[in-house]
Image 1 (cartoon, rainbow, N blue to C red):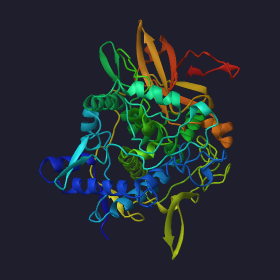
Image 2: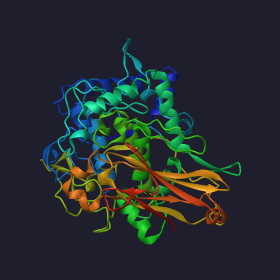
Image 3: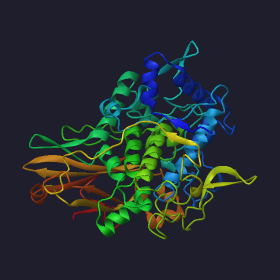
Image 4: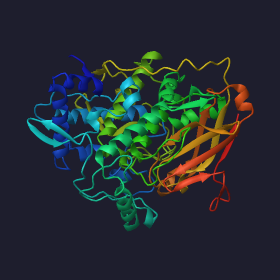
Length: 517
């Protein structure tokens, strides 16, 4: 049987521009189809998009023993759970009449087009002409067919519920509508951004900034800790455990001192770039405070269609890593390593026992397959080889590489470590940014995106794992520059900046610590 080929969305757009609209038309028809299905239909976008976070189901519905959604982040199941997730949405798309040959394209995030212009237009245009009629673009947003409730909120004024009729938003807009105060703040914020074309330009500019951020020293651009650089570095991760997630990456860097990058790190950055955070830069930093897009929180990220095009690229990067490391038929997990327990980072997902060790045989609920006539949960063992086991492969696309300016003989080998950040006291996702001052000039070294749930403190099994850490490489700087520099750290949350480190009133200590090592 021929393999399905997941092509880049840019290539499909180029075909469309040349007059061949068949592939993009079929994709739009399939997405419109699953979005129009009743919310309880197993192939509806509301059903499948909601598997990631809200609306919480199963054991995560209202139990503080679980984080709420099915998704896995900050643990070794991150790549394989999302691989099975993509297969599920692709099967749903192919269930729409006339769309049996549709495959899910990837947004090629490190292509020249993305580095220059941001998100492909098929994901941002307001409308699309399909079958002779102009319709709202099925890939731009999603209108909720019913209410979703944040049943795990332990803080009455921090509710992440969203009502029927709510439409997902992206940077620079806000989608916080759970409380009366949030509704008022969101209405006031969004009233400043009513020009849809300008909003798309702001979104694309922000994404480009995240992808390509550089450092200017003495007028010379140097590669920094950009998303492009992180994608390139993750391909060099030495083993699957470290490659797979930020918890294991952090332990490896902390203990071994090796500056590895996990696949989950640049993945997080794109979520926050689309979902509502600016990236500090070398010029005037004018953040759009109050931007709270759905992609920026695990709770509702899966209900924005762009999520799946982003994750399709992430899955392609996973496959590229497997090919590079001869791991297309076999993966290994370091037993009982940080990032291999169900309570690490986000907390356990429904179907996983709290405080249990994660293995390649752990269930990837809610995804099921039929094996020897019986239905059972997917496991990571079922989705290692995408071609032999899952029937698809990837078409042509970019392969990120480190810029030539990385010269280990001349550059610093040191890094910045930030620790002691209590995620339980920060609502939702946040950024950790490092700055370096040389000769009176302040330079942005790098930013680590911490993609989080809205209420970490609502998960009883997460409380021993609430510390967030971040690492920023100083490889772009000459050793002499680093030796004579002053450093500053900013933690930017939805509520503003923690700058200092200042005192944290409820913690009895400091909001965070950092060192250059």
